[in-house]
Amino acid sequence: MPEEVPPQDPVGAVLQELASAGQEDLGRLLQRAFRVVNTAAIEHLRALGHDQVRVAHASVFFNLDAEGTRMTTLAQRAGISRQAIGQLVRDLGTSGYVALQPDPDDGRAQLVVLTERGVAFCLQAVGTIAALEQRWADILGPGGLEQLRHGLALLGQHDAGPDD
Image (tube, rainbow, N blue to C red):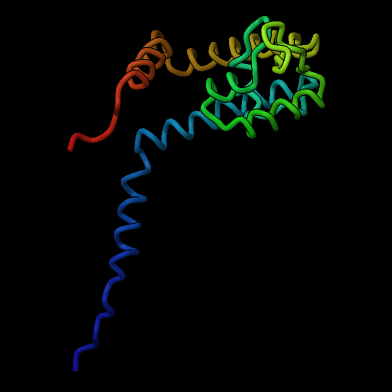
């Protein structure tokens, strides 16, 4: 009697196929690059003495106005909840990067503002980003970084969902 072949696991096969297809998937490549970029920047900034700053804190720094910004506005700009931005602001406040001040336009509201340490951090972050971008330009070759930047900007302006 011939040996029976066990039936293949259809779910396992589908998941394996998906994993194989996803290895070079644009979303995965972008996610991997995002992690590499952020890790390099944070490691460099930590070496400069900013060991309390995490990648998530970028949601605060990138969305602040020079005169200060309300937490609700920070949350909207960052696309996260008010509670989440509140925790990030508390973290940065405890570490001395930001402070809260009364909003001159509304006595009930507060503005998140940079402290001297926060300004120094932002200046160092700008230098770090410039150095990293130069490194990426060297890796990508002549015009490669600008092509990448242009392509990502175009993708960010369009709905990339599949046509139905």
